[in-house]
Length: 276
Ligand SMILES: [Zn+2]
Image (tube, rainbow, N blue to C red; front, side, top):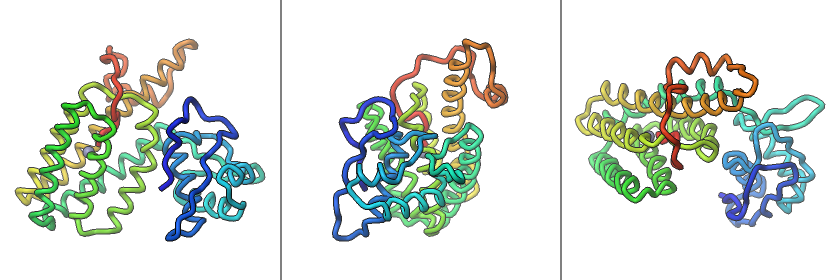
């Protein structure tokens, strides 16, 4: 995986240089180009609505246009890019409705994964989940946000593995990636990390006591809880950005009833806003 440029700052613009691809003996070039572009979209270096210029990207990545074209086609299939006829390829914009749709599917599938894990997890996997809870708590203690996001991802991946359904894991990873970029863009609610830990703990207890029904319900509630936090932040941002005109978005209004948006949220802190 090609990592984001460490020194990169600020908002993206056309022509933002991507790092040249480092060749790898084990992976075909088209795969490396695909991974580099997907990483740039997920990390926000290529921004929603930004046009993808084949020639420019090929030059930045130090490759020919063919693997870039192939990568763009594959990104379109995965929903990261939209093709507009006679205009070209653009980084897919994502609306609150899109995010809500992703969370809806993810909630159901995370529930299924936890349900199956309660039936199929090995004792070693349950021990691993318990260790991950301890590590999660340590990250909160140290306020190590970067590590916490990693542990969070690993925790869910352990559940997918324990579900013994590889397709389910693949689908969930894809859904996660589609909303991952918002973790770098928005800020966390102060209590979200601790709440996420308690939710994880409840799921692990249900899996350990081999209670599939409870595991499913608790995992689904955990995802809904993460969604509410993220939506509250996004709606607040939207309200703020609209305040000068006094207009209020349709989506903002409908979501505002479910989330404590306008009722004096505490000051945001840096962190994994969508910790889930
Ligand atoms: Zn989680």
